[in-house]
Length: 462
Image (tube, rainbow, N blue to C red; front, top):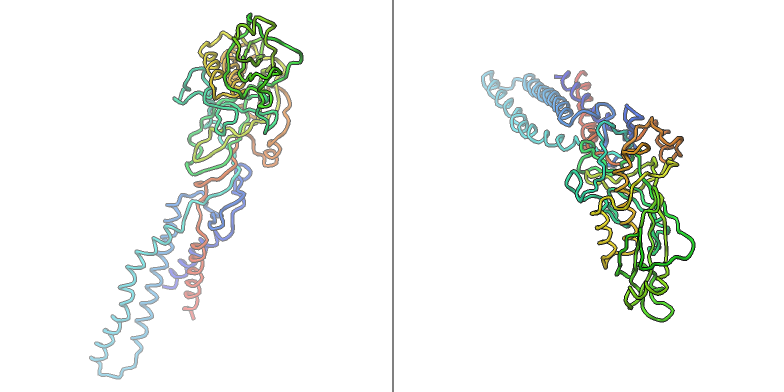
């Protein structure tokens, strides 16, 4: 009985010590690094990658050995006590009373053992858990795929295409990131618009995991420049597509009135493709007179004309991982860029796309940001479809770490990645089913039982 008691106690003590201190990193660092765990949980130092069922079996065997040893020890004590009791009665009475007392002494084991067997498994069942861990983890590239943005209304997976669903100030954009001239200045067109492909990696994240997915991808960028000079709009708008906006948000509120005191909040918007990889947008205000009359006279003075230049770039793309989803864009940081303009054909490609642009501009709820963004997004998605088949075209999406299509790249989070020897793509966030461990309370309970059982076994030797 001493051996199973001591062995069972030592096993429980080892299990407790194995999860006594927080795990800072896994054995296969630097591919995987743990940075923080919840204070009420402890991951195992050894065997943290085993399933919960495996550890339940180990703890169950340990408790089974310990229970057997304790029962045998208790029965031995009862037998010893009544076997050496002095003979104060006749032999037959003594034998009968000793047997009765022995049965009474063994009664606790007979009644308590089933209760212990029923309750102890419940205790260690809830004590062994999948620990939540803040990690930085290299992700397998062969389990990640790029999903090109479709020119159709719906993508291949049945969701609305990002060139339709994304917005300038949206917090759940999937294909486009907008950088504003000023974060608090909404009456300026976006400084740049970046288009990225969507990513598919369904096997990499659980529903209760949250963090950031960081990848290195080929992207398409549109940079804005304001054209200097004075321009006018006339009846003849050859080469331009023209739309009429009814929203007053194309202009500053203070500029909603002209010098003659008449309110002029509606905008006439034109856009065109002046050359390879460029799109121009201009808008002018007009009053309550007939538009044709205003265009026939001296024309409408253009309020603003901007040109967006499109080019390819390699960028670090960060997406938000939340509740198992990973399609919301957070940021795009350019690492290197192409020096050549994107080859493209005319604005007449994909007429349904430009019809949608006209509808966005004409919408009363659309602001100047919405209208300009719609034009740029349409140009990007149309040109991406055609440019990839050109001689200097590229496919948007994930890039192998060894490829440097545009030469040296400026470090960003890559500096952190280099320190960890952890290349793209990687995940920085909470993992819930990577490590197996104990709750802090369970480690204390197992440790206490293990110490007491071990000392009891050693003490019985004397």
